[in-house]
Image 1 (cartoon, helix red, strand yellow):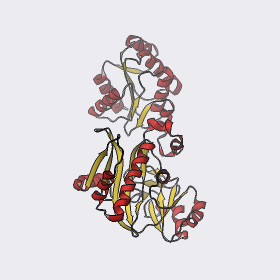
Image 2 (cartoon, helix red, strand yellow):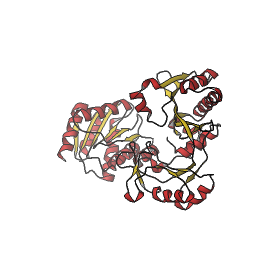
Image 3 (cartoon, helix red, strand yellow):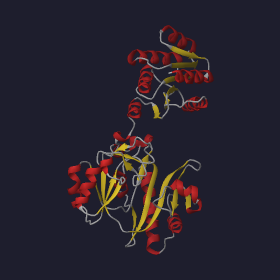
Image 4 (spheres, one colour):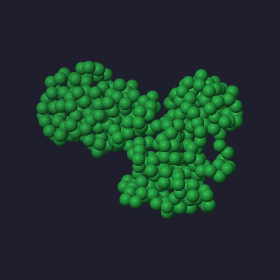
Length: 398
C-alpha cells in the first residue's frame, strides 16, 4: 500500500526524522490559511499523487499553465493562484501514463535553501532477506537513470536484523555522501531513524529523494515516498487509515474485498487462473501468440463459487477486455466449482465477448459437463497452448 508524501513525512516525523514544515491542502479555499501557517516568503506547492516525476509532469488542461506538478510560490497570493490551477486537474507524468492522475490533494511546504542534494532509500533485499540501504550523491534524479549511466555513484549495503543499525552503518552512509564533521553525525542519526521507522511500520520501500544539506548545515528529507507490506497492515490500523482509494484502480479495490489477487494491465484478454505461477504462464503464452493480457488474476486454491463469480464480474467490468480466458488446474480448487461460478457470473452480467475455458485436474469431467450443459457460448480448450491460441484468434476476429 502506498501513501502520499505529506503522510509519509508525518510517519517519519514520529521517529525524529528531520523534515520541512508543511500543510496539506484538500480544497482551494484552504490555500490562504495554509500559507499563513508557514513563515515564507518562499513556498513549494506539491501535487499529491501516487506517482513519481511530479515536478516534470504536465497538467492536461491548458488553462492550468505550462508549469508542472511542483511549483515555487513567492507569496501567499501566488500560492492561492497555483492551488486554483492544480487542485482537481489531471497531472501526467512518466509514471502515470498518458491518462494521468487527478490531483485531489496538495502539500504546501516551506521553501528550502539547498546546498547539496542526495539520495537514500531502504528496501527489502530478497537475495539476503535483509533490509538494504541504497545511497547516492546524485539526489533529485531518477535512481534508475543513475544506475544506468553512473552505477559507481550508488552504494548499497545490508543490515543484519540480529544487530540492527550500528554506528558503522551511519559512517558508511556519511562516507558514501562525502559528509564529515557535524553532517556525518547527522547522517549517522538519520540512518538509525530511517531503519527504525522501516522495521517498526513494516515498510516495503522507503525513499528519500532528495535528502538535502540546507544552507545552514542541516540534513533535511525534502521528499519522501513510502510503500507498506500489505500483508502486515492488520498490525497497523493507523497506517491502513491513510489509504487513498482514489489513487487505486477500482477493480483492484473490489478484488481486495473478495480476497482476490488482481492487478490491472493494459491488454485486451481477461484472465482468470488459479495459482500465481500458472497465472504468469498464462499471461506469457498470451503474449507469445501476439496479444496482451488485461489483468493478472489468481482466484486462489480454495475459491468458492461466489468468489469465482465476483472474479468474473471484475474481469467483465473492464471495457478494454475483448475476450476472456479461464485457465484452471484443479488441485484444491475443483473444476466443477469454477464451472458453476462462471455460469452464475455469465447469467448475472451477461457475456458479450469470446470466452475460452480450459479445465484440468480435480473433477474436470464434472466441470466440463456443467459447462456443456449450460448452453453458454463457451469455446473449450484441451490444454494451455490450445487455449491461448483459441482466445487470441477469437479476439482478433472481434
